[in-house]
Image 1 (cartoon, helix red, strand yellow):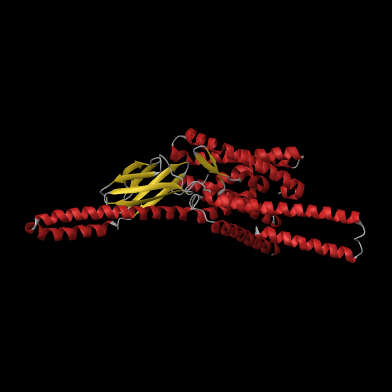
Image 2: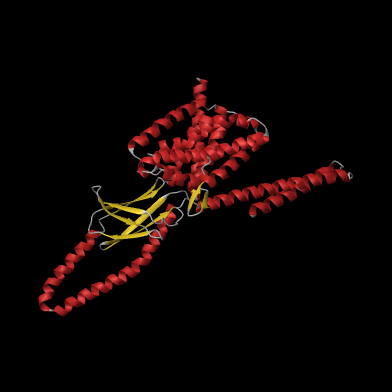
Length: 242
Length: 198
């Protein structure tokens, strides 16, 4: 809007200047001519307005395009013990429904297959602790891949061992304490899950946002294109010269 | 319209790359120095068009504008589309670097073919030029969908199935692109008729 105001201001100034110019030449007496000039100015005004509308349309298009997407599919998954939860979505965040999900291990062998639901979510259970490759062939030449690292499992294992070693000396002495410990562990797990749920949702949102096309990339890309063609033009000119 | 990485097998990728390379060399040879700004503008139009997406039914498709690029550039459409696809792959992760050959050929070739079919029509009167532009833009996308289906034939197993879905999905977009191309051709005819000759 600022632009529009500036334009209007500039335009008013321009009008005043033109009148001054006309009066300095003694042309004010000719009313018809002035009217003509005024109508011309109106036409110019219209042109400027058209230009502003054009710019606004382009801005709108850019706005739309930042929220729009091409058919790029992404996926993200996380572990919760033996269970693995994941979500598959298009660039704009809309879910990838009823799509096949293939899970491979590091050797490239297919372990499992799953299907995404209406919200693009999928889950499966696996004993495999190593790195997993999750591939979603979304059809029509689209495909998403996600590498789920197996490292996250290791500290948990250690934890288990620690609790095991802690348990063994306790067991013969107090059996009640071990029950309590198990209960405590369960409670902690539950609380942690509830707390992590929010965090996971946030990570999901962040990932979706990262996958969105940014305005910076669009403008940068256009710049690159002109740069590349500029270089080609230069090279061609040199060839022609020699 | 962009085939992602890891979908196609090596022979398909190689064929696409070789065909695109031929198109690229032909295109680069045919470009005159004074035409390069036009090529660059259409390159960036193609680059941005893929971001404008139109929802149709359950799925959605984006503008491609390969017909427009082809009708205005002829063989130069190959380098023009190639540059745009490289940047789309690098910046937006649309398609992929290994599938560049297949994607370039599938989108540029229809435009070139239709350019030779309709280029005489573009030089005629306003109505005929619009029709030529419309048909060029309309058919280029459908032929591109057909090419993509051929490339995907191996992975998708049933050619009729994939070609059917791709064609139906892109029919409304093809209509829109036909209209856009028609209007651009008529506008250029009025403002800068020499831009239509290449």
